Length: 221
Image (cartoon, rainbow, N blue to C red):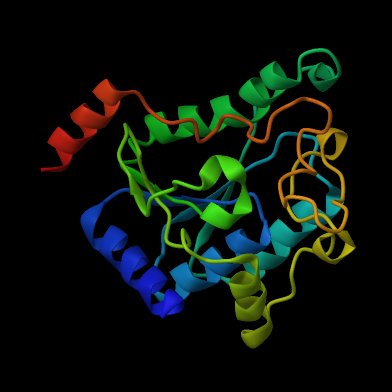
């Protein structure tokens, strides 16, 4: 049921948005989305923002998935210039420069009208109200909204897709190595991200303003 709903959502997005793209942080949910999108006939770009601080295992996995899904165009984005370990003094600015800005700039330059994303409600307390379709300057399509972690794990196992190698070591949410740790039993899946910073999100999926949403809905008619 969940798989069928996700595929239907992806198929709808492919038909609705001429310039649809997909993003990934290479979490387990991201691997599930890539596989479902390929099965649904998605042949667009998969965007991965290389911040310069990803675990080597993450970069290697992106390359391996590129070989597994030749019908999808794997594209790496990055900041124009180095930030000299800004994560030590201004971690939020580090996220802005190295992660948020490269993605937003590319979406604007390519006039992307919607982006497939692998967020789920279960992945973070900040995502409990996540909807399958979010309006904005670039529509966000979240086919896995209702999936639990067990649903994701079961899908990977059933389809013989090896998870990120750090996942089995307790890294339930993949991020940059300076700010990410393995979680302890019973902890929230996002508690290993942005350690000691008092936040659970980098800001890349911050909600658009009401004005931006209204404008986007008008353009969609």
